[in-house]
Picture (cartoon, rainbow, N blue to C red):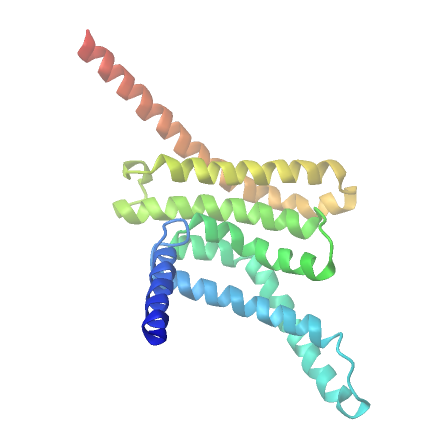
Length: 230
């Protein structure tokens, strides 16, 4: 009886995981979504190992070897975190769609770092993560529709309005957070953030094009109905 129950639970877990991997907000192809999830979990594991290893007391006989290894691990983590915050989200968005996962990718290392430090601050790292995440979510929406129609003419795709509203909500929340950051950050920090303004142009252009196309379609639909009724 126990074996049958365990087997049934295993099948249920597999079904849930499979459904999650196939969710369009996470990605278009389950294998690619799983790879991104594995990468993110691996990065978090390395981050935790580096953080814990630097705080565990060690004997003098092992200090040199372990310190060298931890320094190498820390450098690797820093490089991966920088790539995850700046490059990975947009690359994943173009590669596999998934606006939600694309948005969460740059936020994950920042969230882990703040949790380990026991604080939450709307600092430069979080501002960059929000900016890149919003842009990646918009690119993911665009990439999904481009794949659907097999052309860069995304307006020909049958875009689900709920996804457009979801990505717009994500971008709006990120924009509000950036507004608070700009209003409180010192001037020298704002100078470091200034180049990220170009990224907001991408977000605004993509979402603006979608909403313009939606308004145009709604107008044509209204005009056609009026013509039929008359």
